[in-house]
Image 1 (cartoon, rainbow, N blue to C red):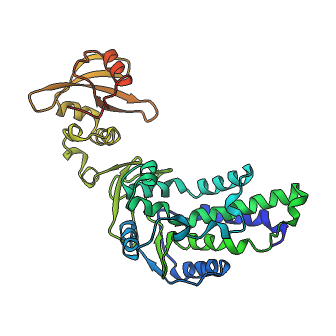
Image 2 (image 1 turned 180 degrees about the horizontal axis):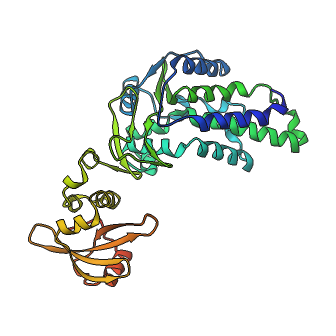
Image 3 (image 1 turned 60 degrees about the vertical axis):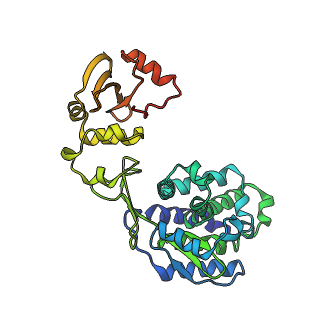
Length: 346
């Protein structure tokens, strides 16, 4: 590769990454196999056959049976073999990498990993067992984004640093560019075992803008798998909440839901007024967009709940507050200075 080609390659890789659809996945198995074969040859490693997982849970099961250990260098491409691309610390390289990942909606796919693991990014990175599987996966998108970052970095430094002209730019595309082909052809995550590659395709994801969202079915699924996740406005909910018509959902669902974000989505779907009617709400104090409501918990008790408006979303939701709260002011003070989470309703 000549220096003058670098800027063009960067633009081309970015164009291809942006063009990849997360809502329509068709895996081209021969292209993925050919791309990984190029990677293995560049690394002087034997070419391994590929076993495709049907979905995230199937990938975990395959890895468990294969006995893959969870140390990064043992289960994915050794970063040390990639001509030092992994250790770029210059701002322009990091910025180019982040730009490529953002353009390709990597945050959506990160969210999918958290769904599979049943927790936040912190939890899946720190838990043992299945969580460690996802920390040790090779990520075709991340490697493809590194291809864009390498081109941007090399082009700028070739132009501005005379010492950089000793750097051999004639071969690093063999390390990085195959991942652009592989990701474009449907590969997302992969694990190396002693005898094969376990591969997982990109999921089919329903989006509202940049947010995972579907009001009439699964928001995340795989083309050939059975695993499904139900998400509205970036919040995972149950199948019942999604598939039950709003008019048939019982407002008392919020009394048994401890997650405030899920309660908010239940209220959003049912409608705040019907929730209040269904729970015999009595307003005992009002202050701006806040109301302190007494709700009938259907256990011979009435408890205070704070009704509030989310200014960023323009929607109302309600949270339980301490039994002694009698005004909006006292409820806000309790909510902002307590060790008891508002999700605790009883």
